[in-house]
Length: 128
Image (cartoon, rainbow, N blue to C red; front, top):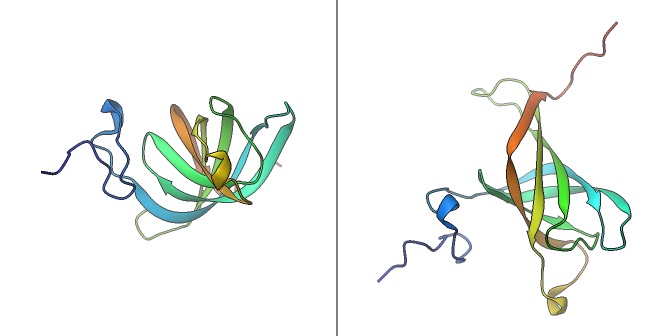
């Protein structure tokens, strides 16, 4: 018997809010910024490896504790459907980090996304 609350791609149990959300495995360039575990600001270029409306997953070298607020900036490539390349700005908080035994360079973290976002053309002209 299949558990309907399991995410097929990751095998983890989903919350009530994300039960019907599909998670997309992909690789998009992104920038993540926030405070690390020492209270210092960090800004890191990385790649988003999975995303849905509730959560994103990416690799981070910075040690960032669960509950820490972060900002994400994703480069969305242009497509026939979307048109020119876009820049997507999101915010969220770290919801899961690897166990100490799994820590390595570029460890994967999960980010619970807040509901607000901003989408704009990737190359905005500067005002004259």
